[in-house]
Length: 382
Image 1: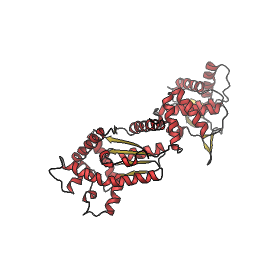
Image 2: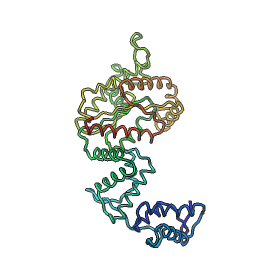
Image 3: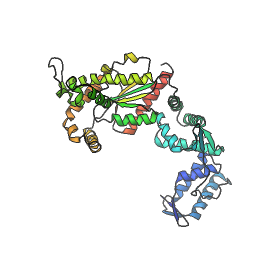
Image 4: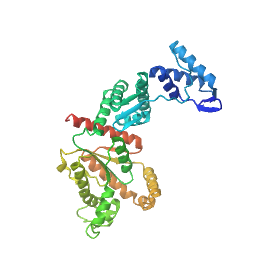
């Protein structure tokens, strides 16, 4: 990266900085970007560029491309006071390209494309002397830019997300994230909650913890141990269970499902959306028919196929939580994998989609698309 040397100051050359400057001079985004790109190409092999030389480059390339278009003093790296302010009921705050581009992830556009769209929206506001805008202005501009840049489906998803986060959903959204131990359910759940602006999240491990404090271990010993060890805590009828590990897991899951239903019922009563993650979310045990029509349910499972990824994540757990040692999980990996396969098999039979969580960003984006398209079908009565 070339460094601009200006009176002893050293400023890295950033194409976006020059683009922004040219937008303020009245260039369109495409024009400003074209000039900035040519300037960058002309200095990409240089380590240092004197300030005077950089000013000449800006003027020369702008003149070659757009004749006598005024470009100001050309000192694009100097601080500028002009900025766009966003006005709402809480007051005013600076327009943030980062914030807008992050929100575009819900549509399925990639990170670089999202940022380019945010830059172009900012550029249009500047070009039209819109120094104060409101949320509706940004939404309208974003929807228009998405349609032009990516197509109607992307714009529709973004519109649905905005209606949802403003409370435009008639019934609450309940997202159930199942999967075996160590596949990243909680991490994905938190990421989705941040993306969707869902404030209520729950874990079946937390529900089990509350239940085990309230119910005697003599009455329900299967609640006192981890899901992959439940078979060791209860007698397994030889004539009823093809596999003791699965039998113990299902017994525990059936008990925890009572607490899950109570958590869902409260969310529905309060008309708030909810994300629940946990190994116990078995579609054949949850008995959610009683909530039919009262909420929009999205049930999915996560899984991993790479045993090394399991080991790495167990290692991370051990570092962050003293009671969750790596050795304990690795020792029980056979049982954990067996339960994972059972979860996937049952989910497949019930039509629950599954996602391999090898890459967090990719997983979250895939699930967010599923959620947005489900909301779209729900809004159309499909």
